[in-house]
Structures are given as C-alpha cells and as structure tokens.
Picture 1 (cartoon, rainbow, N blue to C red):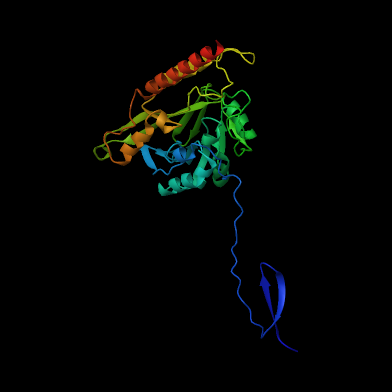
Picture 2 (picture 1 turned 90 degrees about the horizontal axis):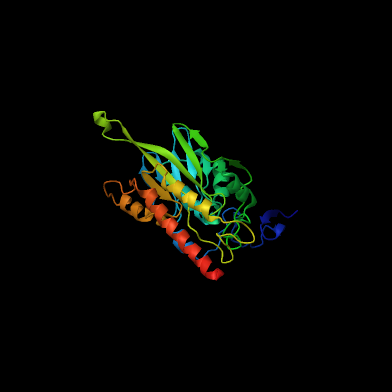
Length: 321
C-alpha cells in the first residue's frame, strides 16, 4: 500500500495527499479578536487627550500614570494600589504600561475610584478592573451611570456624550465616605454640577525629608479634583426650566466646597484645568521646588470654574430674551 502523509490546513480543514506530491506551505496569520473593552471611542479631542505621557512620582506615594490630556493617578498604600479614573478605553494600554514602568503591578490594584462617569474619565475602567481584579468605587449617581455604560438623563451633556463600556459591579460611597487601604485613607467629596455624580478625592501623602539626619516626614494634602466646568448640551439649562428647578445654587455650593478642601497639591481630571500638564513637564525636567505644591491651587481652580458658570448663566439669560 502506498504511504500517505496527513497534514492539517487552517484554511481547508483535514486533507490527505500522496507522499510524493509537492506541498506548499501556506503562511497563516492568526488574528486576535478585538477587545470590546478597549475598542476606541472616537472624539474630536482624542489626539489632544490621548497623547503619550511619561509617568512620574508627583509626591510621596502619589504617581501620575495618565495620558497627556486625561489625568489618572496611582496611590501606593503599602497594602496595594489605588487607581483614580481610567481615561479612554484606548488609553488602557498606555496606563498599564506606565504602571509597570514605575515598578508596580497592575494586578496589585485593589480599588479604582472615579471622578465622573463620562467616557473620557471612565471609559477605560471596565478593562482596568478586569485586568486587575480591583473593586470599582463611585458616588451613587456615578455608579448608576457606570453600570449602565452611559450618562444619566439629567446629565448636562446627555445626548452629547458617547456611551462607554459598562462596569458590572460598582461599590457606592457616600459624601464624606472614607476608604482605607494600608496606611492611606481616601475621602470622597460629592460635587454635583458638571455631572450629577461628580466626586473629588482627597488623601495625605508623605515624603521623607532629610531622612539620613532623622528629620520627620513632610505630609501634604492631595486633591484629585473632578471637573466643575459648566459645559452642557445646547438645550440644557442650569437655570430653572420646565424640566427642573434652578441648579445653580447646588453648583455654586460644589465650587465653594472645592475651594475649601485641604489642598497642598491639586491634580485635576483634565490636567490643563489647573496647569497640571505644565507642572508635570517641569517635574520631569527636575524643576525645584516641586511645582505641584501650591496651597492656593484649589482656590485658584474654583475661581476659574465659577467664572465659567457665570458665563454659562449669562448665555442662558441672553438666549431666554
């Protein structure tokens, strides 16, 4: 009986051919299915937001691991890592690379906190939570939007904001609620306005100063600030309309609350809202003293946010006439 050779073909299944028959190797490219949790969300601001950014230690146990136009912060607590925000879905690879570049492991992230449930700050959270196994934490209204994978109907930008990968499990934290991991306690501050569930986060970060001489640590108050920018869809009103009462008093209270936070270092969700992008460049260039240290940072940002709210109110009043 004539010997026969059996070979497998990816394209044609099982084939049989005589041993003396000439065979031609067919190059096969195995394509990995696209990851639905990191599928890019198109935005006219993508090039500005998602540009590469070198990670850096901001102060003590606080690190910047975000992209050029969207802040993401990592806190090393000694008992695991805490991540704040997740930028865009297409930012995830850069965020995880930055975490590894700093010498940390993505798998050591225990909590992921969220400032606001818009795709540019929370679009990457579902993938980051999957890759790390971390618990996601947000305000009750923020958690509702994250679970749904879209902004709430009462969001000022509803209709203008793209949906995002939904996060199946989200733990809720009350206003003033505290999360402790290792030696670090992080406090949630609800600040509705830009979104219904916007939340800023504060903690204390310490650095050893002159440790060789026995000097004590210098501990500073760090704020990761949610946006309080009064941007909205054209048909939305912060002033009273047929859909709701006047929203401006609550917005002003949030801005005033932001200004009064214990604040030695401010990192805003969009770094250019507080000059954090320039401070980061200076920090990486070795500028001394640390450019992020500014006890007036939150007050300065609050003044800017209040001016934008006043401008929006004036626009609404003019349109009403």
